[in-house]
Length: 420
Image (tube, rainbow, N blue to C red):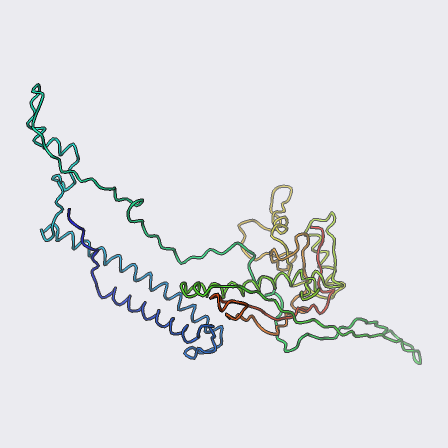
């Protein structure tokens, strides 16, 4: 039986050029990681300008370019293999290759057992009624069927897509808070807690009325939001995209936590103080009111008592659904037809649907003028193998953290609707 020749790949300039570009990008990425050292210290990388985030972003762009170049090489390789197969077939037709020695039909297919028997001397020499006839040997190949189960299993290559776990997007809340920087361990300010206006008309020689003012010092402590993840050396060495994936997900976790703390943080221990836990904010019970009515009453309290203008309303998607689907008795949608595009608003105030909001209340306030996210240090991601026994076990410790303080300067400028 003849042996199949190895697969032929016809080389052409486009394939060689694409492979060269791929090899060059791989070398560039390897050189950068080698320059950063085993601890991936971006400060050691001098071949890229900018801070750590700029260098990490550059490495990410290299990974993306590698994926595109690899796809280009694979496409050209398919063409080269097809060209090689065509050339082999042409040589077979011209008699340039040995044909298999097994018995074949005129169409080139292997003869079956029945076909071999009919063509044999045993069948042709047999005479009915004679009781005997000549014998013949049939050359039949006995072998295991070459199939995917017992032979060559097909190769399946993963796509470049990574489907993330379904979770709350971020940032969704803190983007509505003005962000500043601080170099202190806490943000200290004065709040006017007493204001008695005694000004009035006074007759000539009359007694002036005494006004009263009092200030109270307030402080919002800088807190640290942090997360840690252990990773093996092999995970980062064998899959270059794994590092970028981890370094992107850890900061996402921090932003997601900040979103939650900005609304529901209780301020105890090392927690930030979220809007719903601030002492003195406006409270409006829903009671028997429709949700839109209760929200408007809260806005009125913020305006009348807090002398502020609500800039945003945070509410759970399931609760906003009740508002969005409100209809008149004849079936007309009150909050606009489903085909109407545009941002969600209620009484002219932007609505942000987020599961960071409490399950049974909606939170609103003048975040633009009376809140602040003071950042002591932005998000920082560090890698080390010095944690515990990680050095001896070939593991890396990735940690990410951010330090910030959350301030609500005027409590009465904020409030929530309860009982949703």
